[in-house]
Image: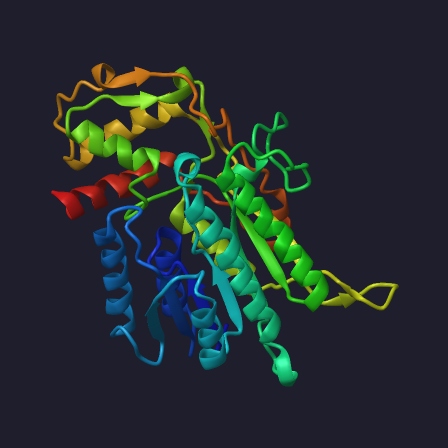
Length: 355
């Protein structure tokens, strides 16, 4: 990564902002170009907070190490201009419209960001090789555990068939993998997709369950626990996700030629998850304990009276469970942050940010 330009989309997002800070801290001579639309899908002040942390680390909004651009991934002219101006060696596409339930009522934004936006990235990567240019060395992009749908086989392996999404969000993420494979084959673009499993941590997304639970508990409201508590999630701490992304960035799939004389797609997909699913009831109990410990909730808080067991919601799945053996084999890495440690850091951040 020495002296490379890295283009990070979704740079003000949860994972993107942590990755950007890590790259700026670790990379010698590295230049990170960040793009984010700063939309109001959730509280923009959290995105602004994340950007401030990056600015403080880099020494300003725009300098030799860090450039931020506010814009939409679906703006093809903007994406083409960024590639022409900064000529990134590495592209990390984390910008997307997230959320399973939101995709049921607001499908348009998923097509715009996750399909058209990703197409624009692929096209820009393709044309980065024009006129003999070195072009993009590695495209890394966010996929999701949602692509597994209601897969009965656990843990979920990247070898499993994933042709039956149960939400539009999942369908767009699977589409990204298919589009990347086609472009890798046609234009020899080294690409790696990463299926993230339920990412959590400080300054995370307010639409995620742990964040929403905290807000409701603090307001004295009841929290709804879906599938009557019979849900399991492979909660993965954001620092573990970012460590996995960093390792993947540095090892693009190798370009090779097949017997037909045509490129073999330099293409890979990995799970990044904790490989240890937690029951949702246990999860919220640990969360409530850490919120009390951090002083977000009072010592005598009655958690049991605040939970409500309800049926499964449309588009949801009962369990997510990552098989991370391929990640361990190829990169020597497996997420390791315990749920309690991760939720403790979130609770401490929440107290500092909101109270």
